[in-house]
Length: 442
Image 1 (cartoon, one colour):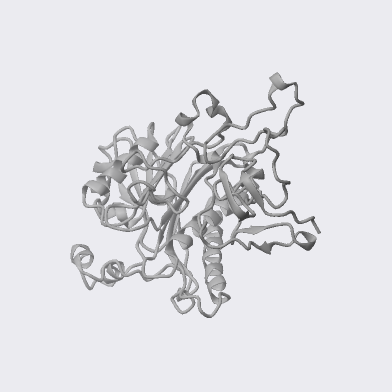
Image 2: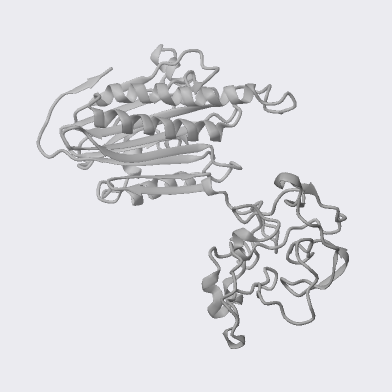
């Protein structure tokens, strides 16, 4: 057991702030006073920068001829874990066997010491190079520091979440996802990737998922499905699996990933409010451009559209919705216009989730005879460009050369239309080096 020292008085050896009688930790910087003898009247040999004052970590003063002083790194601050974050419950590791013991300090110091890694670099001048992470500045007032909960300490404004707007461009494929103008969070997710077939030819993959808002944790469901489907395709395609079979297997794998979220909820404590809610769920649509084939797969009402580079040739919708409206049209009970105008139109009949009636992955393979792009999207976009002609009209003419810009334009189209839902779109160029013919649909 470590030797216990008498409570310190005077000033803190770390930041030189005045100490109160009985203090075991510095109230300003969190310095552990119990493991440090009472400081003498002169300056300490090891000079420690003050997290509160935002000082850099200085070396020993050469003018005094002292040996190089050890540097206190941000991850070594007293009262922090290995990542530099304050330890919970104001504990210290000086008990038997390194077990934490309760801090006897009263509760008048509820706030942890500021992390020097988030200090304002402008306050450090030429010493700012010692700060490893710049301060996050509020997007609203542009002045306040953002706290760990995502709120501005100056104006209190909630900061955008990471998933509120996401963009990715990977070689010939790009995707953009946005929260929209009405929803409080983004429940969509996407994954884009590139790989190679066994013969070395390229394969491009795009997966888009839309969380079912009426389900529990829809944002987690969409993220899990997109990541797992993408992972499955990146494993199968280089091994020579036919792209259509690989897409089928990827959808099954995505469904298993979403199902596992329900298993996690079932094992949660009884008091968990999520326990008695319905299972996490999402829709999925994906596209593969590989070996001269265009393969799409889907479950739910997210869609894929074909838009040729030559706009004098017709575009096409490549998927059929698993929805009430689609069933009404297929049964000949309603026209497409009437069905999709009905308030029940977007009630889906197929989804990924533990409470899905039956998993029925749909796949289709095409061999286009001309170049174009595939637009893979959630209903947050196609609600504002439902028909194939409407979608083609919203896609920029240079989409094949600028897929990221095109995805941005399409998201903007949805936001300009009202942005009532999360909107996610991936743009996959498909180049045909020589004329081809034929298609297959299953």
